[in-house]
Each structure stands twice: as structure tokens, then as C-alpha cells.
Length: 470
Image (spheres, helix red, strand yellow):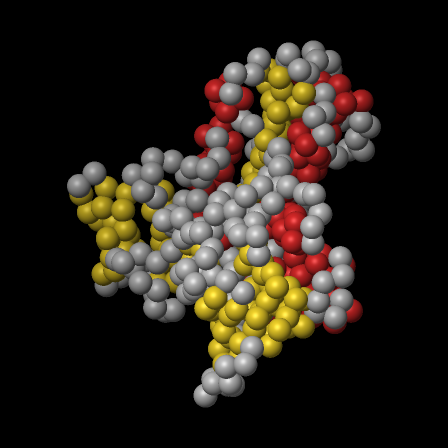
């Protein structure tokens, strides 16, 4: 049934309530706009979006559980004796859902205080200033908006040979919803999502195989950063099949082809993690006069505007599909539509793989800096010299700083080790603020701490002695 053709007039429409959408809505409301947010709800929608409900937060909850179990084993040499560690995945799912529900409720409270209206439904544009929303009860409402922000995120790529069935073949969403641990898993894709899930499951006692079409893991990271991860994969007993293609299911496992030969990889479950595609195909962007590339991504300018009326942010635009990128773009888009002189011009977007050890990077790698013509200097501080790392039982990792001799500025910071995801913020700030290695060296870092590794890498650039030992 259709609720009439008369459209309701609204001020600012935000499509999607993930890390981009809800941040944009809150910033626009702060600037005095009357905001309506439409999202599809359900397990992969709702306040917080896929990141909160089936992505960033659930995956980090699983990884924390797995890392804690691994840490128990790691500290055996320190005298920690535990006869057995049992994993109850059903209790984990309850705990994880409590976290998700609490955070989603927090966003709802922020919306309430900002007088943001939230509508659950499937939205499709039918004019440059108008959209139809299919409501959960089957009715349709029409919204006529002054301006809009598209923040609908992305979804997992599905392989023709391995369609998701929710049972044997799972997306990352399905993998994070497991109520029981399988005996064996094949992970198709060795990017950060695939390796995060694969390593976590291996730490929980699952026999894991990883199938990757390319000749190395984590191809979006510099090879030197991945070597500690490769060593840990070997320690965990993870079977790597590089330069290999998944060809389909057979009884008992996954058929894998490598250099023309095929073999059966045992797997109770198969997790496909080969990338994500933007959620733009069902939005009706043609009638909205919104330009879309062949890859399905909305084409935007430096203000995140696709048209004078419509902005787009996050995974539906070019660049890394990262929640923090979407949130940063959200503020720019909201301010641009409010007439403020802004642009999304960042020097560094930090990227993190929550593997074991973690990898975090910001700014240029050594290779990128040399290709860009800089007079490059690089220094590395090994985690093996860190007293704090020793107390954590951490054996693998380092921090490297890439700088330009001519301008005396930090170009990039790259960290491998425990809590790299927390430490990279200082490196990102150093790149954004055009800091000198002297600035890093002159900043007092607490001792003993992992953060000293950044200080010591800067010391290496200046031929000074380190401080993290002892």
C-alpha cells in the first residue's frame, strides 16, 4: 500500500546511520539543521550501521577474546599456569550483543537530544530533491528534501563459485555470528578482514587455512610490515595457499586451484572475505542526478559534494573503506551543505590490521616516499628492545619512522606490535602537523610504555641513543 503521493517536506536528509551517517546528522543538527535519518535497520543496519552491528565492534570483540586466550599461553613462561581454557561461543554472542545494543542505544540518545528524526526503511531517490521510503509495514512514504547526504556503506563481495548460504559458506557477518566453533575453516582472502578472522579463529583452536589469489598476505600493507604476522601464522599452524583460487565446495572441504593443479582443503566452514562493494545499486542515483563511477562509487569533490544538493561519504566514495574515514568526511559534508568553507584534505588516514601482532600505518611508506621524490631517511625501533614489550611477552614487532631530510618532516609512521592500533594516532598527528623528528624526540613519553618506540625511532633518525630499554 502507498501512503499517498504527497511528499513530506524536510530540511536535511541523511541516508544511512553508520559511522558516516550518524556523525553527519549530529554535526548538521549542531549547526542548526532539521535532520531526518533513514536507514534500513535489521542486523546490518540500524543506528551504528554495519560497523557497529556486524563489523568493527563484533570483530574486535572476537579478536579480544582470541588474543586473551593466546596471551594466557604466551605468559606461561612468566608462571601463569592454567590447566585448560574453554570457549563458550554462545555466551560470547550474548556478551557481544550486549555491547552492540548499549552502543546503539547511546547513538539513539544522542539523536534524541539533537532532535534528529530516525526512520527505518529502504530509501530510493526518484528525483533530485525527492525520495521514496519503503517502510517495514509495506507502506511507502515520500520525502522532499532541501539537501541530502548519502552514507549507505558497503557489503561483502560474493563469489559466484561460493554464494553465501549462511551455513557452510559465510561472509564476515556470518563468521562473527557463529554459536559454535567449527573444527576447520577455510578463509578465502588474505586481506585484513580475512586474516583478522582467520588468526582469531586459529587462536581459539580452529584449524585454519587461508586461500589468497595474490602471492602474499595483506597486500595493502608494505611487505616488511607483514613478516611478523607471517611468522605468527606459522606458529599458529595456519595453512597458507598463496597464488591460489577457490573453485567451489566439495564434500569435506573447499576445492582450491594453484598453478593449474587442484586440491581439496578440509573445511567445515568457508569464510569469503575478498572485499566489499558500495551500497549504491538500489538507491536510484540516476533520477537523483548523482554521478556514479563504474565501480559503483559516488563521484564527489573535495567538499564531498556530488551535486550542489547531495553529498556522499564513507564506503560509497573513493578511498579506503574505513569507519574513521567516513566519520571524518561526515563533518566536512555536513559543514559544506551548511555553507561553511571546508574541504576534505588529509595527509594521513591511519589503517590498521587487528592481526597478531597488530599492524598500523599512517602516511607514506619508504617506497612511496622515494617514488614521490623525497630525500628519504628511515629509522626503526625494534620491539625486542622495549622493556614494556618484554613484560607483555611480545617478541615480534617494530616502529619505523619515514622522514624527508630536505624539509625535516615526518612523512610516515608504521607500527607492528601489541596495541599498534592505539599508538598510531600519535604518528598520524605527527604527519598531519608536519612534525619534525626533533618534535617526536622532544616529546616526553611515559616509561615503561610501548609508546617509547616512536621516540626511539625518531632518535635513530637523529643518531641519538634510545630510552625504551629497561
